Image (cartoon, rainbow, N blue to C red):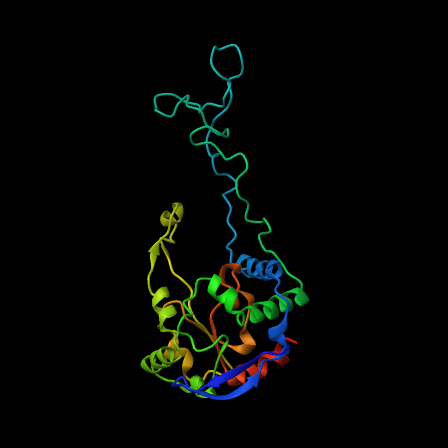
Length: 260
């Protein structure tokens, strides 16, 4: 059964009612959504590998048997600290790796076109499911409605203060504040350039950018996207479905034809 929702003005008052497109009735497929998200993430990976001569730039050679010492390769020469030390072999200080990472390894994962579209459709449907949105951790106690559809004037906002007033009028400010806190990551990722974790908050989907991109970009965790550029990772960051999404009226009109 088609779901009916209100279209709200920028001050949070209901103006009229519309019927959501058929795409919002797509069955929930978390398995395919996760595959689509992982495929997008792997396309951003940078190939890495070691130098083919790493650990082999030395004179190390095994002395063989009959000397009362192990047969590991040893660096030739004398009169230096390195002389007669082990080298070259895996497991030895300064030696090569046994199975190093190779730059030619295929690290990309692909997904079929029809599966990718199904993932987007299913993720769109999850944004209209109040249970899924709540389970994802969003603060929706004061939100006017799920999904939230606003009039097209949302696309013309030019100032961050104007966007903030809209968030306050529709009850989305609680989730914005939830995402404004950054936390230190647990584990070794702190040493690897990703010390802080930031939460994802509202996704704003519009038919066309008439200023909203610049006005809303400074809110932590908020993403803005034209409906034609929607993808599974925007709708389900990390593969977790049910992102809190605010739609413009024109975006709702276009979404059916784009992902049919």
